[in-house]
Length: 305
Ligand SMILES: [Zn+2]
Figure 1: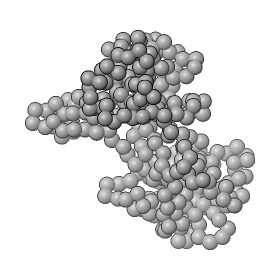
Figure 2: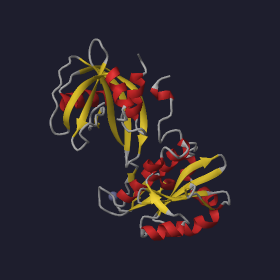
Figure 3: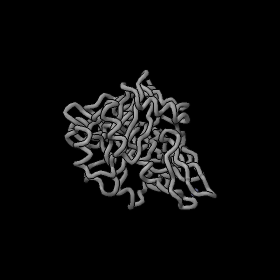
Figure 4: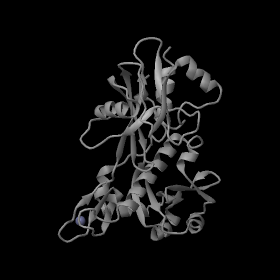
């Protein structure tokens, strides 16, 4: 089974995003008032957790929390149940924690192994959407305040002669497993500036304006590692709302063994055989971050022979 068919961390959320409801504020208000409604409170990119995990508030408490929240957004429908998220970032942390009956705040990334994957996906979705609202309070064109619209999936500039619509911003990045030409099979891993002495990972970079994803793969590999690549093939993608990413995984083949790192982003890059990577994994050195697509790219490659 290919990477794309299997669910990566922060994917596979169970919600029906119910896009058409976003443009129906009357219906959304009615849904919010229903007794079955669930509200997920967040505080500055962090879940608010009790002894069972992220707090899920029922309608009774939701109204109070909404009145203290800077934003409340509609995430979607869980069957018939409407799910909203509220941003309590304007409160001191302790007040936010106490208001929702939590015990502390914690980043979803610290919970990901323990949360059911669908729950992790919805918490990450809430985190990314609320983060965008905090960053997009004003219109970038005219500077007037922007107000929430579309159930929280849009902001509208209030400038009298502007009225621009502002949509959540997503920043795509490519992440690449580069294979060496010929045999034995080897892949390119790099030591990034600021990483631990023996920490190697796949190469990655942001997509620039005017580039296709494949262009970005070819440019980043050339710039960072001095490697020319061909056969750029898509492997899968991963929601990465930390705060606004979308990770797009590829494989590519280098045209030669030669590597020349830039010395800034990458301190060193070198080829690893499968045997070497298995040995590293066996000695407790992780193959990428366990919640991230680079781990999947590496484990898929290792499984091939
Ligand atoms: Zn404006």
